[in-house]
Amino acid sequence: KNEVEQSPQNLTAQEGEFITINCSYSVGISALHWLQQHPGGGIVSLFMLSSGKKKHGRLIATINIQEKHSSLHITASHPRDSAVYICAALPSGSARQLTFGSGTQLTVLP
Amino acid sequence: EAQVTQNPRYLITVTGKKLTVTCSQNMNHEYMSWYRQDPGLGLRQIYYSMNVEVTDKGDVPEGYKVSRKEKRNFPLILESPSPNQTSLYFCASSPTGVPYNEQFFGPGTRLTVL
Image (cartoon, rainbow over all chains, first blue to last red; front, side):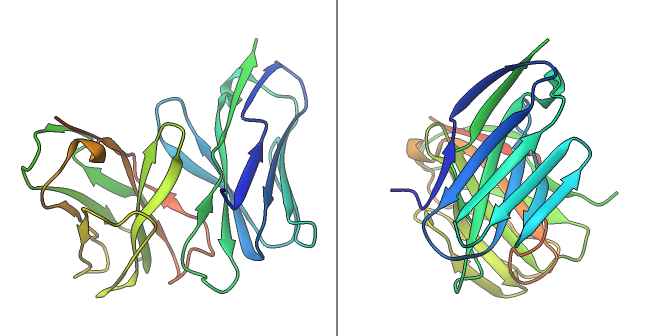
Protein backbone atom coordinates (compact mmCIF):
# COMPACT_ATOMS: atom_id res chain seq x y z
CA LYS A 1 0.00 0.00 0.00
CA ASN A 2 1.37 3.38 -1.00
CA GLU A 3 2.16 5.55 2.01
CA VAL A 4 0.91 8.60 0.10
CA GLU A 5 -2.65 8.58 -1.19
CA GLN A 6 -4.21 11.16 -3.47
CA SER A 7 -7.84 11.82 -4.25
CA PRO A 8 -9.54 12.04 -6.55
CA GLN A 9 -7.60 10.16 -9.22
CA ASN A 10 -9.42 12.02 -11.97
CA LEU A 11 -11.23 15.32 -11.82
CA THR A 12 -13.12 17.20 -14.52
CA ALA A 13 -14.22 20.75 -13.86
CA GLN A 14 -15.74 23.64 -15.73
CA GLU A 15 -13.71 26.78 -16.23
CA GLY A 16 -14.02 29.06 -13.22
CA GLU A 17 -14.72 26.34 -10.67
CA PHE A 18 -12.89 26.05 -7.36
CA ILE A 19 -10.86 22.84 -7.30
CA THR A 20 -9.51 20.81 -4.39
CA ILE A 21 -7.07 17.92 -4.63
CA ASN A 22 -6.30 15.96 -1.50
CA CYS A 23 -3.18 14.15 -0.30
CA SER A 24 -2.98 12.00 2.80
CA TYR A 25 -0.02 10.11 4.16
CA SER A 26 0.39 7.39 6.74
CA VAL A 27 3.81 8.20 8.19
CA GLY A 28 5.28 11.20 9.92
CA ILE A 29 6.76 13.64 7.47
CA SER A 30 9.06 16.64 7.58
CA ALA A 31 7.89 18.20 4.30
CA LEU A 32 5.43 17.73 1.47
CA HIS A 33 5.80 18.79 -2.14
CA TRP A 34 3.14 19.54 -4.72
CA LEU A 35 4.19 19.04 -8.33
CA GLN A 36 2.49 19.76 -11.63
CA GLN A 37 3.08 17.57 -14.67
CA HIS A 38 2.12 19.20 -17.94
CA PRO A 39 0.47 17.25 -20.76
CA GLY A 40 3.84 17.27 -22.54
CA GLY A 41 5.41 15.45 -19.59
CA GLY A 42 7.47 18.18 -17.94
CA ILE A 43 7.31 18.41 -14.15
CA VAL A 44 7.30 21.67 -12.22
CA SER A 45 7.51 22.10 -8.48
CA LEU A 46 4.58 24.17 -7.18
CA PHE A 47 5.02 24.19 -3.41
CA MET A 48 7.05 22.74 -0.59
CA LEU A 49 5.23 22.79 2.74
CA SER A 50 6.20 21.84 6.25
CA SER A 51 3.34 23.64 7.99
CA GLY A 52 0.44 25.99 7.43
CA LYS A 53 -0.44 27.41 4.07
CA LYS A 54 1.23 28.82 0.97
CA LYS A 55 -0.26 30.79 -1.90
CA HIS A 56 1.02 31.48 -5.38
CA GLY A 57 -1.35 33.24 -7.73
CA ARG A 58 -4.52 31.13 -7.97
CA LEU A 59 -2.92 28.16 -6.25
CA ILE A 60 -3.14 27.56 -2.52
CA ALA A 61 -1.60 24.65 -0.64
CA THR A 62 -2.34 23.75 2.94
CA ILE A 63 -1.01 21.09 5.26
CA ASN A 64 -2.10 19.73 8.63
CA ILE A 65 0.82 17.75 9.97
CA GLN A 66 -1.13 16.26 12.89
CA GLU A 67 -3.94 15.03 10.64
CA LYS A 68 -1.44 13.85 8.01
CA HIS A 69 -3.27 15.66 5.25
CA SER A 70 -2.55 18.27 2.62
CA SER A 71 -4.75 19.96 0.04
CA LEU A 72 -4.06 21.82 -3.16
CA HIS A 73 -6.71 24.36 -4.16
CA ILE A 74 -7.08 26.10 -7.49
CA THR A 75 -9.31 29.15 -7.59
CA ALA A 76 -10.99 30.36 -10.79
CA SER A 77 -9.76 27.32 -12.70
CA HIS A 78 -8.75 27.66 -16.34
CA PRO A 79 -8.20 25.12 -19.11
CA ARG A 80 -4.45 25.78 -18.88
CA ASP A 81 -4.58 24.30 -15.36
CA SER A 82 -5.27 20.91 -16.95
CA ALA A 83 -2.41 18.69 -15.83
CA VAL A 84 -1.50 15.90 -13.46
CA TYR A 85 -0.93 17.10 -9.90
CA ILE A 86 1.35 14.99 -7.74
CA CYS A 87 2.07 15.20 -4.04
CA ALA A 88 5.31 13.85 -2.63
CA ALA A 89 6.14 13.39 1.03
CA LEU A 90 9.52 13.52 2.69
CA PRO A 91 9.24 11.06 5.60
CA SER A 92 10.69 12.12 8.92
CA GLY A 93 13.96 10.44 9.70
CA SER A 94 14.99 9.28 6.23
CA ALA A 95 15.23 12.88 5.03
CA ARG A 96 16.65 11.70 1.76
CA GLN A 97 13.87 10.18 -0.31
CA LEU A 98 10.52 11.41 -1.49
CA THR A 99 7.50 9.12 -1.56
CA PHE A 100 5.11 10.03 -4.35
CA GLY A 101 1.36 9.85 -4.66
CA SER A 102 -0.07 8.39 -7.84
CA GLY A 103 -1.25 11.75 -9.13
CA THR A 104 -4.57 13.46 -9.89
CA GLN A 105 -5.46 14.05 -13.53
CA LEU A 106 -7.26 17.40 -13.72
CA THR A 107 -9.16 18.45 -16.82
CA VAL A 108 -10.69 21.92 -16.93
CA LEU A 109 -13.22 22.39 -19.69
CA PRO A 110 -13.83 25.78 -21.31
CA GLU B 1 19.09 30.19 -17.26
CA ALA B 2 18.87 27.85 -14.28
CA GLN B 3 18.00 24.41 -15.54
CA VAL B 4 18.40 20.67 -15.45
CA THR B 5 19.20 19.14 -18.81
CA GLN B 6 18.88 15.52 -19.88
CA ASN B 7 20.13 13.79 -22.99
CA PRO B 8 18.89 12.14 -25.02
CA ARG B 9 15.23 13.13 -24.80
CA TYR B 10 14.10 10.07 -26.72
CA LEU B 11 15.90 6.78 -27.20
CA ILE B 12 14.94 3.48 -28.78
CA THR B 13 17.44 0.70 -28.20
CA VAL B 14 17.68 -3.06 -28.10
CA THR B 15 18.05 -5.46 -25.21
CA GLY B 16 21.57 -5.68 -23.86
CA LYS B 17 23.06 -2.62 -25.54
CA LYS B 18 24.65 -0.44 -22.85
CA LEU B 19 23.43 3.12 -22.68
CA THR B 20 23.92 6.26 -20.64
CA VAL B 21 21.43 9.02 -20.01
CA THR B 22 23.16 12.22 -19.01
CA CYS B 23 21.87 14.74 -16.48
CA SER B 24 23.43 18.09 -15.80
CA GLN B 25 22.41 21.05 -13.62
CA ASN B 26 23.88 24.55 -13.58
CA MET B 27 22.59 25.64 -10.15
CA ASN B 28 25.36 24.19 -7.96
CA HIS B 29 22.80 21.92 -6.31
CA GLU B 30 23.98 19.28 -3.89
CA TYR B 31 21.11 16.80 -4.21
CA MET B 32 20.40 15.01 -7.47
CA SER B 33 18.09 12.14 -8.17
CA TRP B 34 16.81 9.84 -10.89
CA TYR B 35 13.18 8.77 -11.14
CA ARG B 36 11.25 6.59 -13.50
CA GLN B 37 7.59 7.07 -14.26
CA ASP B 38 5.34 4.26 -15.41
CA PRO B 39 1.58 4.24 -16.03
CA GLY B 40 -0.28 3.25 -12.89
CA LEU B 41 2.87 3.27 -10.77
CA GLY B 42 3.69 6.96 -10.66
CA LEU B 43 7.16 8.30 -9.98
CA ARG B 44 9.65 5.98 -8.33
CA GLN B 45 13.15 6.83 -7.25
CA ILE B 46 16.02 4.89 -8.79
CA TYR B 47 19.12 6.44 -7.24
CA TYR B 48 19.99 9.66 -5.51
CA SER B 49 23.11 11.58 -4.60
CA MET B 50 23.51 13.93 -1.68
CA ASN B 51 26.81 15.33 -2.96
CA VAL B 52 29.89 14.51 -5.01
CA GLU B 53 30.93 10.87 -4.58
CA VAL B 54 27.89 10.18 -2.36
CA THR B 55 25.20 8.03 -3.98
CA ASP B 56 22.55 5.72 -2.62
CA LYS B 57 19.84 3.40 -3.85
CA GLY B 58 16.26 4.48 -4.16
CA ASP B 59 13.25 2.22 -4.41
CA VAL B 60 13.99 0.57 -7.77
CA PRO B 61 17.79 0.48 -8.33
CA GLU B 62 18.05 -2.95 -9.98
CA GLY B 63 19.56 -2.78 -13.45
CA TYR B 64 20.88 0.78 -13.06
CA LYS B 65 24.15 2.41 -12.08
CA VAL B 66 25.00 6.03 -11.34
CA SER B 67 28.06 8.09 -10.59
CA ARG B 68 28.64 11.57 -9.17
CA LYS B 69 32.17 12.60 -10.00
CA GLU B 70 31.29 16.26 -10.42
CA LYS B 71 28.64 18.28 -8.68
CA ARG B 72 26.83 19.25 -11.87
CA ASN B 73 26.57 15.82 -13.54
CA PHE B 74 24.70 12.69 -12.52
CA PRO B 75 24.57 10.15 -15.36
CA LEU B 76 22.29 7.13 -15.31
CA ILE B 77 23.83 3.99 -16.78
CA LEU B 78 21.97 0.92 -18.00
CA GLU B 79 24.63 -1.75 -18.46
CA SER B 80 22.32 -4.30 -20.09
CA PRO B 81 18.92 -2.76 -20.76
CA SER B 82 15.84 -4.97 -20.75
CA PRO B 83 12.29 -4.30 -21.98
CA ASN B 84 11.04 -3.77 -18.42
CA GLN B 85 13.23 -0.68 -18.29
CA THR B 86 11.10 0.97 -20.96
CA SER B 87 9.90 4.05 -19.14
CA LEU B 88 9.95 7.82 -18.83
CA TYR B 89 12.98 8.93 -16.83
CA PHE B 90 13.41 12.18 -14.93
CA CYS B 91 16.47 13.68 -13.35
CA ALA B 92 15.94 16.24 -10.59
CA SER B 93 18.08 18.42 -8.38
CA SER B 94 17.63 20.32 -5.14
CA PRO B 95 19.82 22.94 -3.45
CA THR B 96 20.70 21.10 -0.27
CA GLY B 97 21.80 17.59 0.50
CA VAL B 98 18.24 16.47 1.19
CA PRO B 99 15.10 17.05 -0.91
CA TYR B 100 13.72 19.54 1.60
CA ASN B 101 13.67 22.35 -0.89
CA GLU B 102 12.08 22.89 -4.26
CA GLN B 103 12.89 20.14 -6.72
CA PHE B 104 14.00 21.13 -10.22
CA PHE B 105 13.18 18.52 -12.83
CA GLY B 106 14.77 17.84 -16.17
CA PRO B 107 12.55 17.53 -19.26
CA GLY B 108 12.47 13.75 -19.18
CA THR B 109 13.93 10.97 -21.33
CA ARG B 110 11.57 8.54 -22.97
CA LEU B 111 13.36 5.20 -23.29
CA THR B 112 12.10 2.23 -25.25
CA VAL B 113 13.98 -1.06 -25.00
CA LEU B 114 13.03 -3.58 -27.69
